Image (cartoon, rainbow, N blue to C red; front, top):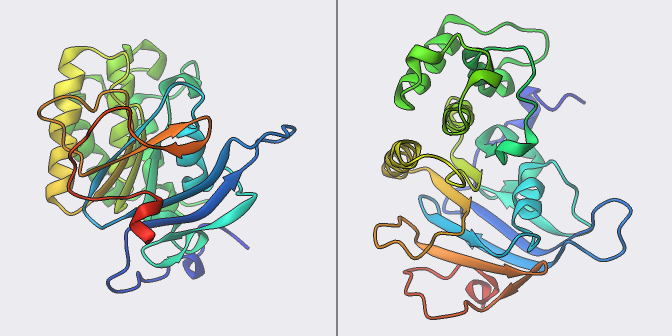
Length: 250
């Protein structure tokens, strides 16, 4: 009955992809037209995949559905070979900064500690280990001197780094990131890119919504392009080592 209960923490299936979506269609409540239509997605473990499309293409909807915040109208989602609901603790989600209430009266450290709640269960306080993990992530994102500051007093780049720190301490194996480099300062871009490269070296899997796949130093192994909720062919040639869309199931 409780989403944080131990029964929802199943072992991964050996040799399974990190993430699979098959025939995924999603409707937003009260809307007749689907937000996503027949999405097929297969991401190997340890890969970094870019999710690209214009505003309203369905990128955020896809990430939220995989994270369990939206319910598919049809299709299936599997995480490490298990049904999505069996592995929520293995997936962490970084929303767009605009979706957070930055006036909420908590400190940066308290925001980061929320990443441990999936492991704590109901009505339990963070342990010494949880606080140590939070301190580590805050240091990784160069936020140590701001740890006691109210989240609304942070700059946009600092807020984005705090959200990523919250993801990191969940100890998940799949990171779902909704435009983490959008409208942030160059220092934040550099810090986040270095942290994500380190996560990939540790074997983590990344699915990231982004507008910037043309950089020479981008870390992506594959790209899924969306237009009006559907997978489309890229507008020009991209040379990535893996196919992750519908053709990958052929």
